[in-house]
Amino acid sequence: MAIQKGEVAILTLGDRTIELPIIVGTEGERAIDIARLRKETGLITLDPGFVNTGSCVSAITFVNGEQGILRYRGIPIEELVEKSSFVETAYLLINGRLPRQKELNRFRVLLNDSSLVHEDMHAFFQHFPRDSHPMGILSSMVTALRSFYPDLEGLSQSEEVNITLTRLLSKVRTMAAMSYKISRGHKIVYPREDLSYCANFLNMMFDSPVRPYHIDDDLVDALNAFWIIHADHEQNCSSAAVRLVGSGRVNLYAAISAGTAALWGPLHGGANQAVIEMLEDIQATGGDCEPFIKRAKDRNDPFRLMGFGHRVYKTYDPRAKIMKKIVDRVLPKVQSDPLLDVAMRLEEAATRDPYFLDHNLYPNIDFYAGIVLRAMGIPTNMFTVMFAIGRLPGWIAQWKEGAADPNWKLHRPRQIYVGRPLARYVPIEDRDEAYSAEACSYNAY
Image (cartoon, rainbow, N blue to C red):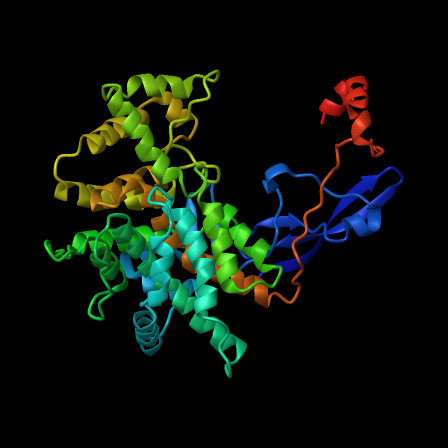
């Protein structure tokens, strides 16, 4: 928990001085608490993109971009990938500690028992247009789950939340595989009681009556690692969306649907898909990476080399280090894939280029994640869905923490208005003349 020290920041406004408390976190992070600023001064702060603004105190995830540190509930991500499973990590994030053996067994049973999706939901999937993006479908279907699984009578709030979050963790995985099968016109594969969470997903995706799927332990381990390192990442775009929507005291399904929609964008969860699309562009022009690297270094060219650099990490992304090792394990299992060959050439060229090294533009998690997912056989348009499944525990943990916060407030950011000053209603018959006279000022906004 964050602790408030006696130190204060002094804000001078003309002949007035305002004392603002300084909050210090357990890892030494410091923040100026401006909660009373508007009440005492009539002023607000302006911080586009909230790059310098903390929206909450949180005990879930710690990120230090300068030192390349990522920890869930204090445990380094490297240890979790090496020693834990995605299911155990999900329990850790949601409940604040690692489970005892009995608790982990119970959690696994609940996930298995909740893995089936109501048969009537199949009709929803069938009626989406064939070219619908899976993220749009997933966001809609998560919201629809609320209708099929309404409030549970006779349970405490904590019991109801535990059942709801278990349903989401299990059913979203099933729905993702189901949507893939339906999009290909194939028979749906149901989850199996004898398979682990990750193995079950791969089997539901790729098993068929004419070609039974062989469970490869290396691919299962790769998926386990992929989902663990995507499980949470502090107050990113989608997690902030879950907290913001959740602050309105909406149900968990609606908050997770909002997070899914926020994750969809190419600058957030869609970045791993953008990596593959960039590699396809390189391959289509002959496979030479150098012209693309040259464009990325040109400040006058808007082109960006997808999968390199990170807004938070100013050194090597710790998740990318882990996924790089996974790539080295998985690629030998893949039959010749020219696109993956392009990826390896691009990695080699960029990591020895002084410009990229000087600007801390190392390969990030999205670069290696895209390669691993392609090696597994996951279609490109489902990459962001894979990210969403992994991020579910983090979203749930963020929603729970926000709901339990004794200092909870409905999120309501302020703004600085720069629109037109006081204006009068103009009757429609007079607007041509009015707009001509005021064209400059009218169009200025």
